[in-house]
Length: 151
Image 1 (cartoon, rainbow, N blue to C red):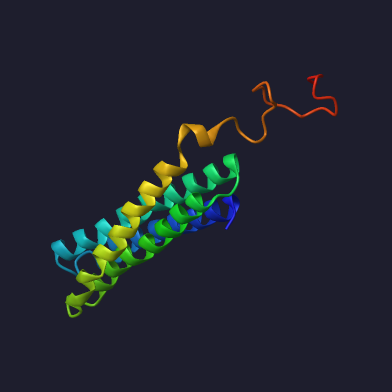
Image 2 (cartoon, helix red, strand yellow):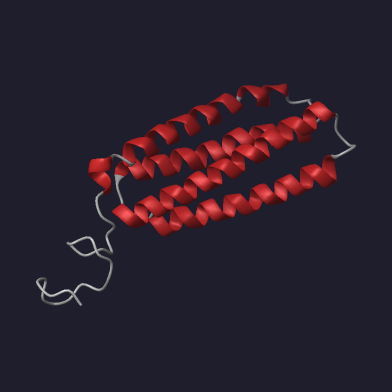
């Protein structure tokens, strides 16, 4: 997936996190016990944080071009952002009848950790260099036909 795609997925997951948070605050309050509501809110919080991480993956990919390590970070964040909060959401919505869902959350959490490590590797200083849209001299602008002449 390209940088714009990762940014788009991050934005969509952010919107879903807001919807889930609103549902938890207004639809679940008084219907589930406070501990379950806190579990749901943890899922919302992690989903929102990692939607922002996916935006960062998209911006990094747009800045540096595609790479396997940036792609790995994106896929790990996406997988973890579905599995970790999703298992918490389902655990709460199932009313505690599916306790096995609590054992799935660490799989998503491990993917999120691996995503952050991949993002750190992708952000190595020697890899970042100047943005793709900059001139050789580091100034932003349109590259002229004559590389010696700056517009």
